[in-house]
Length: 254
Image 1 (cartoon, rainbow, N blue to C red):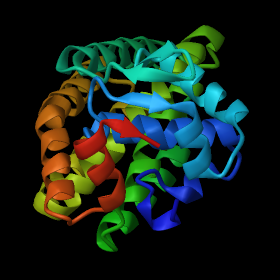
Image 2: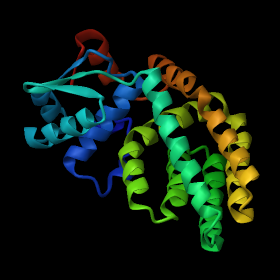
Image 3: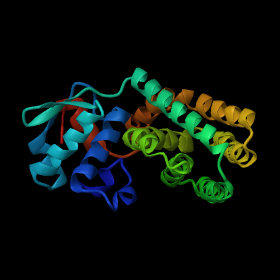
Image 4: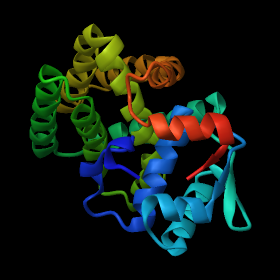
């Protein structure tokens, strides 16, 4: 499989195992709609297309099964996909996590956290300036993960880590669409993140609530963005022409 056919950013995979790499590519292809619900994934075909043995393929499918993205079958898996309800539930959990974290932050020293978030915020602005959707997405996820990690709560972090793989794919697809179709919307996105920093710095609960509402009201368009991402693929504006053809015609991917 040619590198340019991949949807998932190669630079995000420097520390990933072969199984994790395959899982990342399959996951984002399923979430984007490139691999449709009901598609049968063949271990042998995936192994051939990624030039690996079947062992990392099995690892990848087990990861996706743990995320309810596929159901394991003999020598492969059936894609169950990600519904609107699943996406809403993911954001419900994320809202609960960040609400809890904010309550802990009120009681903590936050100077180092504010400095760290401010640096990430500057990187987000640079990514917007240069039209780099992938880098913006990386910094966006890092921004929220930095807030979550700041309270040193091992079980909250465990929940976040379980949520993160699907979350980052949702964010990546959404931001790629926004850079192409809604570039002017990034002023509002930046304003939301700047409000986060201000709320943390001031330890103002009312401002924290406002920043949470603005951020999570903002993601209500996520389903529309995912639909638009599929339209971009259909128009040939994105990548994966070969994968899309296989998905549409044979419904057996990789």
